[in-house]
Length: 249
Image 1 (tube, rainbow, N blue to C red):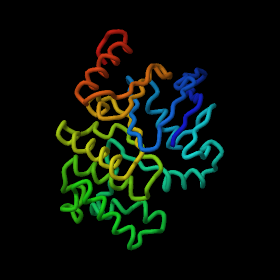
Image 2: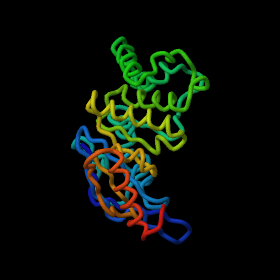
Image 3: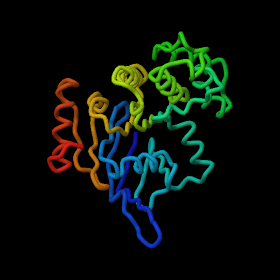
């Protein structure tokens, strides 16, 4: 579903160039729930911004559903972001003046297809993620976990090829984090969604099928989940400690 091939990106300040991504290559299979983990400055956020078409990359290829994103103009990139990618952000990014249901429908409104089918699909998503009872409430009147589950529903309203989640549990307590991760699991199991999540949280990552560890702009190791969530989290913590040279992140 997603292929990243030999990706390079750097930033320039004054006359100094700082390499951020140094030949990153990986793939995410259709229906897979994958995570990218790494310390601050490792390149994981830059990687997500390149995949989401918000920043250009210097060299390499990004293919989504077989389509090369590198050759698209601004109109083409906007179409990909609205129709083929779904986004879940750390800060929810809900519009305060709209209800939960209206927020979920925003991508369909932008697309010009907020029809009966869209309304029915929004109802289905709200039921799936346990937020039907708050559909007429506003973001200020619901909990953080409910806001993020609303954001997950919004990200899926266009049936995207890939859902990108940027630290989706970063502003939530452990109980709310669990409900959001369960929402991703439901999206994967019941809607066959493909999900790539950037996170620093080993608990959230331990629910994924595979975790890609990034250090200093390169892939350090890819870890496949074997066994239960708790044992995988322990394994993740050991590998993160190894990656950081024996020090806790």
